[in-house]
Image 1 (tube, helix red, strand yellow):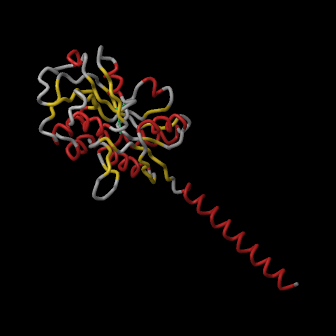
Image 2 (cartoon, rainbow, N blue to C red):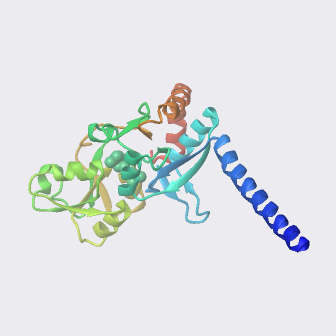
Length: 252
Ligand code: ARG
């Protein structure tokens, strides 16, 4: 009987120790200040998955890495599709998101943004052979591919008589364009330049249709983190980081 009591005591001690150790692990995770940063890594060259290393890389990732180093933050990047990324930011699922996100009023109602770090705009991409497509007014009666829920989607919807075809990823819209299933794509200038550079049969046409500023999104209620990000970002902007990243990542 005594022996049985000793065994029970030993089991209780082991369980308590294991539970305590697990609890400590969790706390340590917080103390190091690790934050989860969402990105829709389908937007080359700003955020995409390097097919050889399987790592998330790009202009935005380098920028956020530099911010994290300054602000003393440990970052875990989470690859999230565009729709759930915006929904997740509105609900506070992630600590931040860097994903070429245009700062705009309806988003500002749901999340906070850092100071702007990059200016882009919407541009039309079409096949070289589509000589009749020269600007937005020529897209009436035509089909235009966009990434659903982006400012490219907004822009395409605003053109009269255009059929907007939404895709979960911009790459799928370009596949459809290259296969002659749609007439054009509207997306952010740096992404358009990347595709035009890669495929000889594509061209951009017309003027840049919008002027948009990218910001880093932080959920409402995480103002302290937003301040840290802004302080680091401001210093990096002053040191000319955007020029460096432009040279490294963008088609000139
Ligand atoms: N700048 C555009 C917007 O905010 C498109 C961003 C898409 N980003 C991405 N990683 N898929 O709507």
